Image (cartoon, rainbow, N blue to C red; front, top):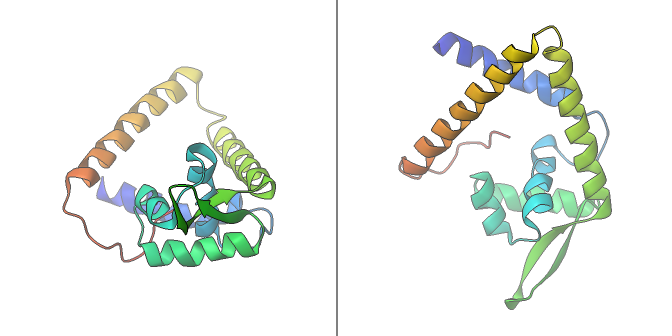
Length: 150
């Protein structure tokens, strides 16, 4: 199993390059911050870092890229006017759609030769796997990540 996990992680870098088809003006890891902003709405950088389980200083640098690229904007936090939140822009929503579509297309193509029942079984097992990993990470002692895994 360890060999297969190493193989899977190696494929991740190649998959990232295949998904990032457009020049959105930000690194791939920064672009991945758009998804929680899309689904959870505007949030502070510290909250975004917690959602992504990443170092806040890394997320701060990445959010600066998103703002500079026009994919996100800073806005006043209604709970504390001294603080700001990051919100996704229309351009950021468009980037999310493009990245999502590229991911869907890549997975559909990769699994196109599989019978439907096998794809369904894989989805069920992969969902169970993700849940088990998330549960483990939540129960493990907190550590500062050496680098973010997008």
